[in-house]
Image 1 (tube, rainbow, N blue to C red):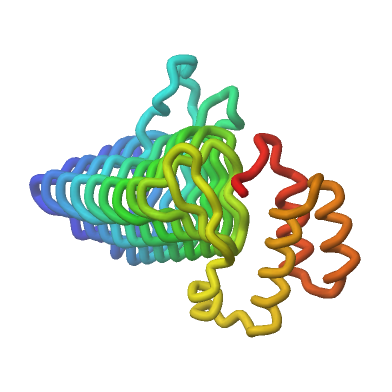
Image 2 (spheres, rainbow, N blue to C red):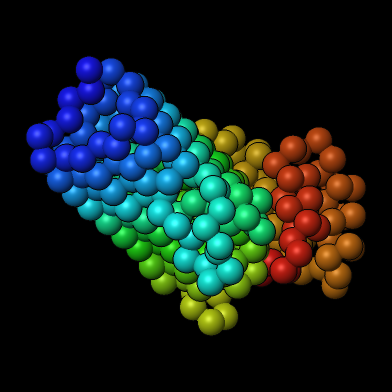
Length: 258
């Protein structure tokens, strides 16, 4: 049986694996499903059609699966899906999706969300992503694998953050954030070269990092995006990461930060 503190409240319509731990004064609503090995800290609120996977650690005072902060939301039965082995620290807020935005917010596996991080409606978070304190997403944002969202970073709705991207503290991003690259600043933010140290820590070889740096410089200095993308594909056709950076820039509907 789940280990539920005597002061916690769990709705009869919730489904908890046998070894789930629920801390003092937490509230688990109907429609919530929590997988094995997950621990819920005290004063945590989880509601709505929310699925949480295995071996997650959710610290106290978090608010998860609540209604989206969207004036158009009409109460539809939208969803939140959280994968396995995530760490969610104090006062983190994660909202469900909206009916007009696809109806789903998703957080993948092995992510680390520090205190006061906010994930809004219809966002998609990959795997091994780090949110530093108060990293904030507006609705419909995609954060790809291994990205690092710096403290007090604010991401505009419908933007994307690429794989292995790094945003510095206080960054305000109103366009897409390039993969592999350090992006820092308020208005306007700028890129400051490839995130070399971060990529080395992730096991990227020096040759691949050099190719990424070359692709990044081509994108930044080419007269047009089309010219830059074509040059990357001509010069670095066998480097998957360079092709991905070029394709990411091509797909940026809101443009991207240079």
